[in-house]
Amino acid sequence: MTNMTITLPEDLKEELQKHKEVNWSAVARRAMQEHLKKVHIAERIAGKSKLTKKDVEELDKLIKKGIAKNHGL
Image 1: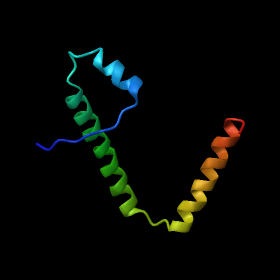
Image 2: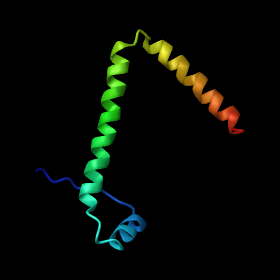
Image 3: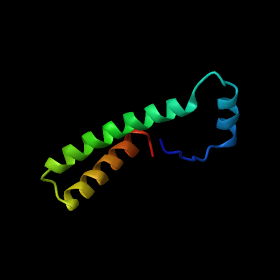
Image 4: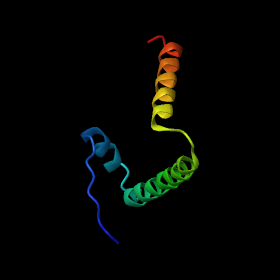
């Protein structure tokens, strides 16, 4: 197995150290595996998409505009 180094904010590190009974490496590994599953699903969906880059950019603008409107921004 390969080792990985990550950078954490000091306050998070302190909280994690309060729970030495937890295998934080295993927690991080599972979280990364779950996230990769989502990434793979998104890649399969995107691979079948007929949208152009321009279409995606336009949808992005509309979504951001809607979010800003809903949150009073």
